[in-house]
Length: 118
Image 1 (cartoon, rainbow, N blue to C red):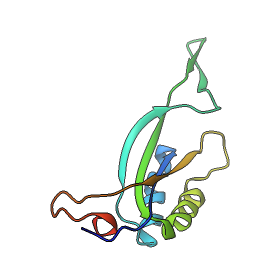
Image 2: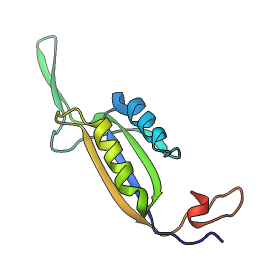
Image 3: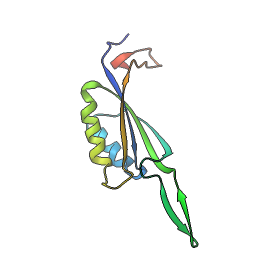
């Protein structure tokens, strides 16, 4: 079994068009492992109103990209700072970052656990 190190899950909801720049910046700080999903959601923005052929309609769930990254506690600030700096446009809808404790991680291929599995 791997040595138990305090770990966190960083979940970032970002604009889809910021994914490549965020991913590249994370690779530069040696953060390679991540799960990426295309999602739809809304925050305070509550969607956007669009016009089509003279009619207004509301798009209340906007396309977003969700990144899930597991890191040791010591890397949390560096990863979060990198995501904020590269995902931020300054406009409403830039997204959110959630940080949660991770009890354990197990690598399926080898059975390794803890920080060795990350």
